[in-house]
Image (cartoon, rainbow, N blue to C red; front, side, top):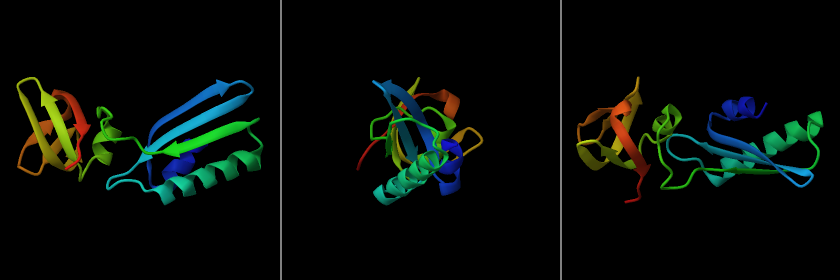
Length: 131
């Protein structure tokens, strides 16, 4: 249900965790999109999910947290590459390290501003960096 709601908003679901805390359930979502997700989008998504959970009386007491992933989070999945388009990344490869703006992601390949194209399978680690 939560994944369907996130999809309808046009956001990308990065992570969804549920954890029992006493008699309550903690639900945490990380969402993002190319260009960055903003606070009002997180608040709107929170309302939509709460309305659905409460309307269907699916859960006992629960706490819901919706946020975006922070800078420094390791990027490794297709969703990570899609949401990172337009952002500056620090990339480490076996024989090369560089920092560049990701212009495009398609079919497993990342195209960077300075003309470099890299297969995502060749990346050992990558993180977003601030200017």
